[in-house]
Structures are given as structure tokens and as C-alpha cells.
Length: 216
Image 1 (cartoon, rainbow, N blue to C red):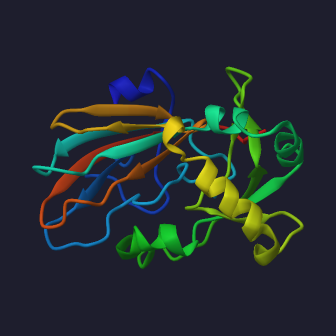
Image 2 (image 1 turned 180 degrees about the vertical axis):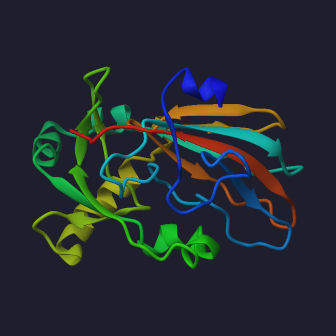
């Protein structure tokens, strides 16, 4: 918590209760008998909030003997690799993000039963980072359902292209966890995906989310 406060304000996560005595610290765990993991889809954290987080910190407490890596994708690079015409079109679009999109909901199905509220927020499909001034793609397969003014069916072809494009190998890196490892990422220009390839083993992490601002 002290380390996190050096960079921002820790905030509570909307779907998970914090650990005892520290409501801003959540436990992200997958036990030996469980099949679905938390965050096992490419996403930008809680894009369905009006003010999504600035960043997240994840600390490994228990790791499986193999697997359980986390992939990260650079959304600056993904945007800059698009054609000039595609960039011009996306600069004028607004994405509708929801907490109830099926792929993301499945990764936290035990928690959604406790917190049935749906969150919906509209954000630019391309956001400008408030510190660097660089543009980054800001749609994700976990939460983005459609574009404002368009139906889901009308939005689907473009979104499907972007979902594939923004996680191309050349934009990504892969983090291999050890007990005690800490990852800290900028949620405003990065997506991540927790790889679910360690069935039959435990993986326990502690996470802190840092408050952000409204994307522009």
C-alpha cells in the first residue's frame, strides 16, 4: 500500500471485496479445482467505469509450477501501426463499454453473483494519454460492446478487426511470474491477459488498483 501511494490513490475494485483490513487490496486466485481464471481475456481494467484506473499493481503470492504468465500489449504501438485513414476514422468514434460482456463475465462468474450491478461507460475509441500526449487504442474484447450511434451488429466487423490487431505479437510481451514478483502497468495505454494454462494448481496474487480520470 505504501508503494502504491507513491504513484496514485488506491481505489476499491467494483466486483471483489478487499482482504481483511485492506479494502483496496484484492486477492486474485485460482484454486486447484477451478477451471476459469480471473482476467483470462485481453482487456484494459474496468473500462466500463466513467473514470477507469490509471494503473494496476499485481504481486505474486503463490505461483503454479508452470504456466500462469501474463501477457501485455502496447496500445500506443497498436494505434500507430494503423493506416492514416483508419486512424482518422477511429479518432471520431466513441466506444460503449460494459461490465456484463460475456467473455469478461465468465472470468469472474463467482463474483458477479454477489455484485449483480451492470456498469456502462462511453469513452473515445482512441484516447490521449494525459501525461505523454500520445494516442492509444482504447477498445478491448473484454468490455467494448459497440460504438455509440451504432448497433452491436454494425460495430462488430470493425471491433473484430481491432481486437485482433491490437494484440499482434509485435505489440506484446510476456511476464513470467515468480513468488514475490510485482508487475505495475499503465492501464491507459496497455492491455493484459492472464493465461489460463495451469489447471490443477494454485495461483494467488494480491492486486491494487490506482484511481484514474475520464479518458479524452
